[in-house]
Length: 358
Image 1 (tube, helix red, strand yellow):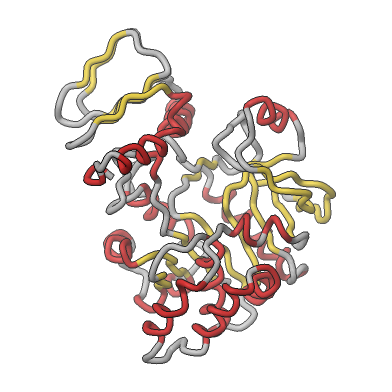
Image 2 (cartoon, one colour; image 1 turned 120 degrees about the horizontal axis):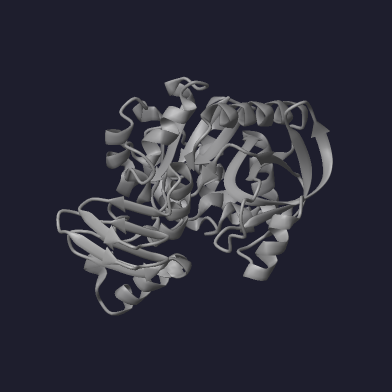
């Protein structure tokens, strides 16, 4: 079995710390180590270093090598440009399949955090066993919701297919994009909705068959690229062919178009750290406090606040549900309930010609 760490994301909702040149996965939001380093160390008890691949773009390859120097050069799968997760997963599957036919691969984001690593690896092991028995299926690991979160997608599970003492696997009825709050509240109360964590396990040839079926232009480009794997012309052909793939996510491009999916409910203390608000919730629960403070900060009578200060003193009085993030050239102040809209702020910065701050 192999693991692919997907490390091409930009983490725009965590601006001004996460920037285009050094996005979310390279920062220690949840602990002392960067999120991508934590991801690698989480996998290392199960996978040998040569069994872990990195899927990224050229912009981040150098920084990843600093964070995870153990990964060999040949285990980098580098896209000429970011064309979405469907193409990234397809390219990685094509390369691994060419070198190791019929492989089982876990595809995992580089910028999430997990509290219970042992339980996480047990879940991966269960997914691996499912793929061995149901080789044509895509296995997705969903998360049992703990609150009505409107910033996450959901998986609507249906019939139970497999059950053992510790785990179950279900058919998938549909995927639901970020819902309204009223719907999210319904989903939390229901047994049959999971958060979509973007974690997948499949046989490489199974995913490639689904790409052939649902994304013909992507399949055509990947087939051409695969002819030159381990050939001196590979980089040239990759540069020419990869921009021809359909630019779409795995969810839209494949998962919402097939019934060949099984979902495992996972329960291992997961968070995607998708916004400053979700970081506040995660760290607040972890440290049993409702005020999270880093750097030079002094506060009085604050409640449900996150303050990320630097050398300059940030002093607060009587704040509630407020996020303050200071960086050398920009400061963010927002209400926690709007922290998911930081992406809109970045769009406005770009529209006003302030790309320097991105």
